[in-house]
Amino acid sequence: MKLFKSFAIAAFTASILFNCGSASSVISTPLENIDTLPLKTSELTEAEMQHWGHLDLKKDTIPGMSVDRAYDEIIKNKKGSIVIVAVIDSGIDIDHEDLQGVIWTNKKEIPGNGIDDDNNGYVDDVHGWNFLGDGYNEQLEFVRLLASGDTSHPRYAEAKAERQVEYDKYAGIKTNYEQFLQQITNADDALEKETKKKNYTREDVDAISTNNQTLQQYIAIAKYVYTMDFESLKAAKKDISEGLEDITDRLNYNLNVDFRGRKTGDNPDDMVEKYYGNNNVKPKKPSESHGTHVAGIIAAVRNNGKGANGVANNVKIMSVRAVPNGDEYDKDIALAIRYAADNGAQIINTSFGKYYSPHSDWVRDAIVYAASKDVLIVNAAGNEGADLDTKDVYPNDAIGTGPEISDNFISVGSLDSKYGSSMISSFSNYGKINVDIFAPGGDIYSTYPENTYKSIGGTSMASPAVAGIAALIRSYYPKLTAPQVKKIIMDSGLALTTKVIVGGKTSDVRPFKDLSKSGKIANAYNAMILAEQTAKNL
Image (cartoon, rainbow, N blue to C red):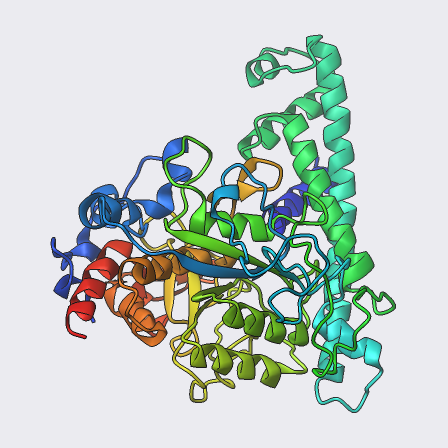
């Protein structure tokens, strides 16, 4: 997600270097005129930014999911049942202060005895399973296709061209990052010397009066960095260094045809070999943060005075590590879905995706298998600003725009916090057929490894928000089936006719209702009302 900021940084680098069912039918306070709400003109406070996805559109003019309202007016002191939500992702910091109370434990396993006590094929799978074993870095799927040498593959030429474009792009960004980092480092050193302060402030920089052209340039760099929402040049150096690490990984591993990252000893093209990996579901290093962030959006302990509140209470998170630093293997995902379904998960969150998939049928079979176990799968739509009705993405519950193979799969697009024409995240994929609903995904504050917290944006963040609503429904109305929960979420969303910017292109403005199957934004308050009505009619 750091790469969203990277393109702005890269652009600045170049300039520095070269030029110095309508919702109103179920909501107790009708929102028929929701599209005429006044736009919020003031910037969100820090508290609002850290919580915006839980706020209410009518009350706050922020396109959140009315989570707080659902708790205040509907859930109140009701007792719900525990819901197991599997997070198929990178490793999860299960010891995090805001997650350790909500981690699933396999009570059929005796920890650490080296025996498969529950006979499920996975030894000591106490909190889930790790299908990556000791692996971390991986190629992208189209690079694997090139590495196979199968020139007869119908997408080989496409993959070769795409790899060249991507490699050239990231090589250029890497150069810009390195040069910009050097510029900031030089400026920081010079300003420390000028102010005689290691931690000088913006005010200190503004107070400098000098005729020295080099120092003037360093001051200009500092002032521009401040406009990019960095509190200091040191904070910018840290962020850029982390981004540089990501970009270097992209070049050295993800786009490297000669790299081989798999360490599990199995054949990823053979589904007969199923029992590989290990029981270590934690991240290999702090930067493997994605799964931890996703888990917190769903279920970070509520109202404990610490960092973030999850959408759902009464949740236990099952950690299934299957998403590397690169593209996931279809085999790992298919087995991860089956593992979650077999071990009691009622909801699975899949915040990952790719555009090449050699064994997509294995994953579709697993989705159907999960449906047979009454498991709901909530999936991120993807971050390329693309129309998924014209571009294949995996995983999916259909081939192209063909018929869905099951009714237990929800695809979620991302919203930003500013209600109005710019509320669709510029990166979010969309599709009248292949995206079901939108939810908050821009700059979402959640758990991060080693007892820290961070705001990150992506459809990866919108998906667990909807998974959280699904968990609320299944907790308080446990008799509802996965298809019923899906229908409730889609029918109870807020229907908007607002015209919005698509893909971040101001020249591309469309009615919001045309960007997903439901034409709605997810709403927990409405969903709980409709769930109660549905449960009463069973």
